[in-house]
Length: 332
Image 1 (cartoon, rainbow, N blue to C red):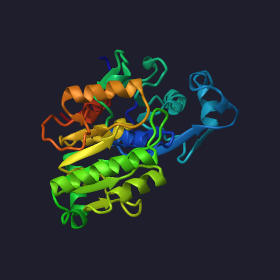
Image 2: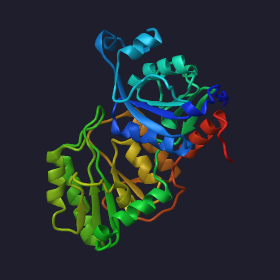
Image 3: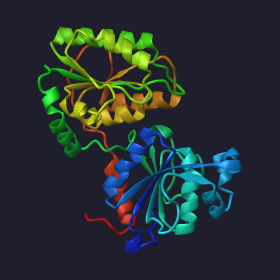
């Protein structure tokens, strides 16, 4: 793999812009890389508006960069001083990131398959199940993420008073929701809740449950009803999200199959991870789950607990170190 050195070395411009379309899972990946690189960073949610928004993203690449940027709605300015590093994720951010790169000469990383020639970016970080290759492509195992021992330790202390009284084994439950490929209807949620409640009763343990933004309220209510009589902590969406605390305190983790991010983050702990199937199908995600099982990180959830070991899954530093080398910031 060949990664070009950045020509932009001004200290005044030594910052990172993370460009996303606002999807939380995508933002988390961009933030994880930015934090690992170590430059000051800002998150900008961007989208093309007006007549240019009618063009597919690949055709937006043909629009002069200044004109395209003039049609972008962003919650942060897209003007000088330009960044030294651009991190984009999501296909709709691709033309915008490349426009910024064109006018600024910033180093540009895209996370996941950009669906345009990878040579347009300085670096692309794509999960192995995307089947993407190229001289400037880093292959990651699942999603990059920010689940580190330090972050887990801090979160564990923050929620210790609420979680410590709950009995072991503690089973963290990470819930997704409806997507293009999968559904999480109330019936499926109720069935999962019944399995979890039975497991908690049989083991004398407790449940740590957190929904995502995609979790339907009725589905969450069905699961909550099913686990009401066993020890549990179900986050209701108010206050700070205990997501990382749940990962830290858990003895095992159950994740719905719709989210590559949540499964990979769970596997970043090195703890047993069980994947709960949902109605629906995705060839791409099927490849991902097969690879995670082959690596020994996950097993299907069948209502029982087992114990096994594997190397935690986290390729964030692999990507960040390549960027630091390109920016002449490698401290190794």
